[in-house]
Length: 350
Image (cartoon, rainbow, N blue to C red; front, side):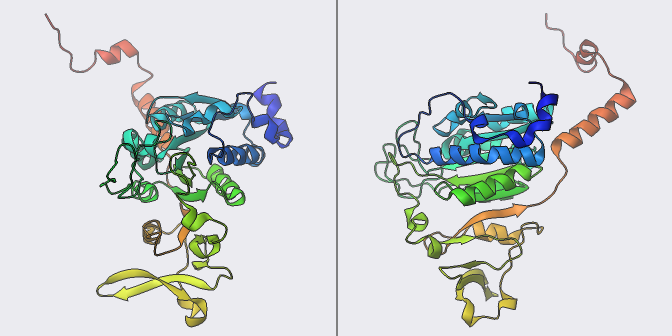
């Protein structure tokens, strides 16, 4: 069926249309299974709402457990090289702006060897959606500490405990000027589906950190705030235009504290404060200083924020580049490649 014929049948897509025939090869109990399942579930809605044929969707990955993802999606895809998925995705999006391009990476692939590529993709506002699976460990290479592992983490490559300060993925994305920044947890299927839909709708560089358990090499890494017994007290669901409520009955809130000695975030009981004075979350505020505070909260002292931290509009790199190309063509003509190569400084080596 051609793309033109397919375009009239967006509502006919089902999850099965996005499930490939490849055997899924992750360890039993891996959090990646949940992420894959939620992506396959939301894809029909994404295609229907945005009128995107399946043939116009591509998943690009690097190296790592997460990077098997393109094999399991029945779309176009590319399992690329270590850390370079954002670069390859950039080339694809610039040459084919009609495609919806997703990048699948991990905390090792995306923040170690690929950190530089990630930062520049975000700052350029390339219209791609980057999902970073964070399990705070190197899983594929069998349990070494990763860029997001906590200080003191004992692993095969840090037997006495890591002495390095971990990278904060969300703060990195925000200071790199990503226009959409969010966090989800692999075990919360509804929240993840909501975040994936929001990501798909966004036009610009989108970055999503997905906290994902590696039950073999870093089991229970996030249980202190994701376990069902503590989740309502230890996590905060961000809602645009709403105060920062959390707790079993939304009976607590985060608010500002401090004065001349510096501003801090404090936990307050809703009953003890005038609600008109509470902090209100604003995804599109500029500069988004609150988002920088929220992604920096110590997870041992504060509830962990989940959801969308930032969502704003900004000129797209592809549009700005296309404008320059058109302008150059109008003023200088189409040009010829070989003439261009010999038009500037050249050297003859004898």
